[in-house]
Image (cartoon, rainbow, N blue to C red):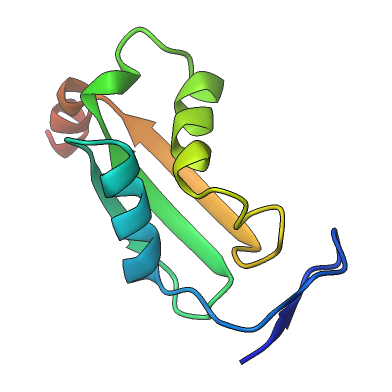
Length: 96
């Protein structure tokens, strides 16, 4: 499968899976848990739980996650990743 990035004009020769994204995030943020949804190969939703998020604002948390994905966002391999980030304590409160 090929995908085209309208932002960069790059043509990508593979489709990334939600499992690939989960592995990238969890290996890039040791101790994290990533819950990724989306099956179209370019649009994903994610929840990332990581103790490293403590004391950081949402933008800083998202930057940590995006850093684990390398250039896959800029090159169009991942077109969109909507995400929510939580510390383990925040996640536990969300689960009520």
